[in-house]
Length: 339
Image (cartoon, rainbow, N blue to C red; front, side, top):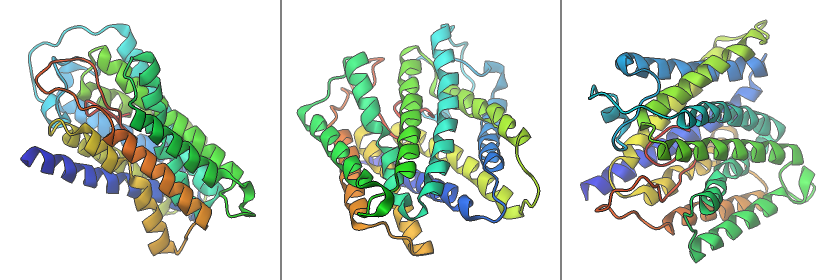
């Protein structure tokens, strides 16, 4: 089907974009004269500039607006009739989600710096936020997990335990510090994704969510830039973080197109949520960094759990109109909205 081909195609694009972005975030740690505040600030600022560009494409609607139904980002940015007013809650959680996604990237960089040899497994820990969001929706929105999905949760937990122990590398596990920061990044990503679910229920447009979250990241990015050490900065030290910000926005656009192609949400999530494999491949090919066997095995368990929990999800009935989302995604989620 044409819709399925489009969903798969855009999902593959998103997977590679986010995999490349995560790899570059880790690679910046090895740059001479790398400054943490400068790198994170430039990344957030570039993402915010992308949001500002989309805002200027139809600035008459403002930052926060509602649509009658979720649409792909490319469609939602077109001029339309006056949208209905929005309550305060979707706006608050959207701003909080923008801060959370920035925090996730911050912890991801710290995680990769703590254990550069295990970027692939650590990225799979971050991608496990789909499990967290699924559990939150299970308890808060009555979106009940199927028996197969509970098995996926157990699979991810087994993978995390395999990668985490024994800590310190003596038995081949990832470092405790790197694993801890990766878990923090996963929690931040999960909170950001869940905020999308809350905002979607409140009627926030997919395009509005993208614009608000990215601009929020750009504004917050000014703070670390003011504290950054600019002595010894190189052109590559500026270009790579800015590229990561552009990749962030491009990946979100690809996810919007994939999720707007039809009722193929679970398939799309399973594909672009596997970007940790891209990180592993890039680390192995470009830098010859291969994790220990326990890290690879744990990564495989975690990735399998993240994929199967999406594929086991109940698909929405396309003939019924509903404000509920029945699937969640990582690192972004349903209705084609940025985290």
